Length: 551
Image: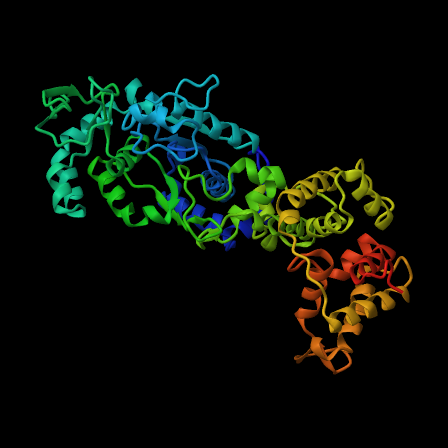
């Protein structure tokens, strides 16, 4: 993503298109504008995202910041950049470690620290970071910085211990009964008997305690409870000695900081009215919400920081450019998405397709184009003569292990294209080799053609031999279709060919991919042949048919 600009383009055409844009960031931004009817905005409008550092950051965490940044930029357009904004990335790093994550080294070493604040748990990864929470916070900041996000990082531990929440906590003590009245009906009978919105940090064990309160003294700002060893203990609720349960903590933080916008996943949706109510009890105004659907792994399970399932941030960026990930976050945020390696190639190609379309669009369609939001209104001009999916097929067919081999094919296909003239394509070549070696190659499953398929492949080779060596992808694709139309197995009578006869079944091209490349599917095969070469494709067919070269 492009870093947030100091100034933004306020061309009258953009402003007019923005006022009517149906893109979801503009729809959310209009809610914030409507929040301050008459334009009576505060000095700063605050956008917030939350992060629970119980595990390493995953792509869903990044998605909240990326999407909130898009709404923030849309808000700047709608207000003609006359209102200051801030984006606060808040880490709940004072939460107790309820379970040991599955993906940490030496989990046994962390057992003595269960239920201690994450910033009091030793860092299992080694290095310069003092605690588990500090390490995970640093991993989040590193990635957000890589993307150029403009944000401020906030640590719950620092806010509680420095006294920044002291006033809000004293206010919560003064409204203790009202908070309990809001919370208790949402709990089961057993939980009601022990519930408290305040969680003391035991001065004896350092653990976050889930214990009932014996007394809450709002005047003196203290709570009294029974510690783990059975002794009655009184603690000031200020200075980081006490934190709030996570549901009241949402409302307290919103009221204390004056948050105007926060998005969260569908799993928080049922609790949102409760967060809002507690915020109101404490004299605040609940922010505008955006509830997005959850990310799933390839098995349809919710991705989890502690389980480490699904894709990590670093894994995506090993195989694809950052902008493709930002696109995946932009598209259909209210639809559940599977987040695993197979989605990467399509996201890459779709990003460049949107980028290619952008210069040809009017402002209405530009503001609906994901690349406008990904790049904060300034998409780059990039010429990409070869799609990522074709590069993957080229690696597959050529067995290339270094990019100089691939560039040999590309330069023949497009003589004026070089790594120097097209650095973005050069970057994709490296991504394609990595992705193929790690995910495509291990799963390739070639199958032997039956008699009909062997005859079809032979006919394809013969047809290709009749074409000029520099035939383009469209010409080659039409030649392939001509072959398929003459074979009864591949005729699709629900479709019509240009000549009025039956169309071609998708089974024809599935067969080609399965037999020649060991894959289930791929991009238009005519385009692939134009890139790989007619002679090379005929040799591939000949090798498959066991004749050395197809005549």
